[in-house]
Length: 344
Image (cartoon, rainbow, N blue to C red; front, side, top):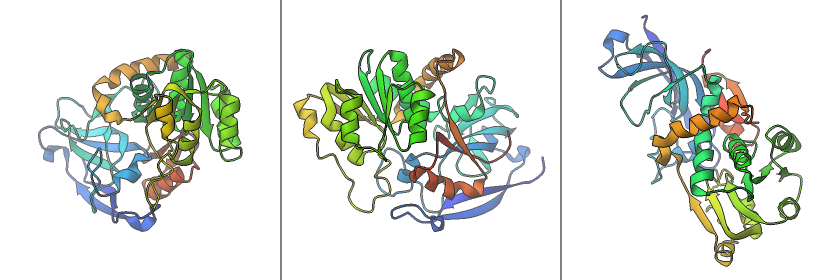
């Protein structure tokens, strides 16, 4: 195997507010040949990278649910790639794997390292981008957040924000499989039309062009039993005014707050939890990693039966990573945002 050059995007500075291009630095380095790999190592050529809201939190210093990306380190990213060299009995050359590949053209890692978490992908089950969407971390987040944390049941009203995004579109479709009434919240007529007419939600509120509080009264006349929150801020605060007794609020993300330069905006209507004996709970999907195969099998079954759809928004080129991340926070993506680094 000829000597390969790895291109990488590293964190140069911790952002204040929205990330900017100067927060990144590019680097390149030679990669080892197959004979130079250590026992247990594999070399993966990156094909797709997942662009996720969680990336903004990983760029901050301080304590969190996962170690922050340090200054000078390759930016963390979940991805899918092809094994091009292997000294591991778990993976052979040509295998497709998913894992924490980082924002780089190639990933060299220990196949047994839990932080890299390499997992074999079967490309015959679904198109590869879907393994970063409904069959990947967003799908796992939706599945366990709705079923384990919210414990949604047939006949309940489920509201989900960021409904056209990667997690939101899966939450709504799983809720429909359970027999729930599902109301999405999304920004713009096109996204709301997609959520209702393509994904099968019962209704979708365009928070950019309507008054959310009034629309919640119309679309949820019996109140809200489950709210799956991906955005935080004023939307969370408004939904709290419509919750039912014993409602469950799942705190999955708060994309409206990630780039704030002032204190995080918390819900002023939190006493609704007391009045309604309701529960608000946060969760991290990595806590369910041992049960991922269960979730993937069930979602894949719905897909094969034509009862489930996924939509991906794919950008091209490693160098476009900073722009892709900004696109996510500006709400300009339509579906799960993915960066394609190399051809399949």
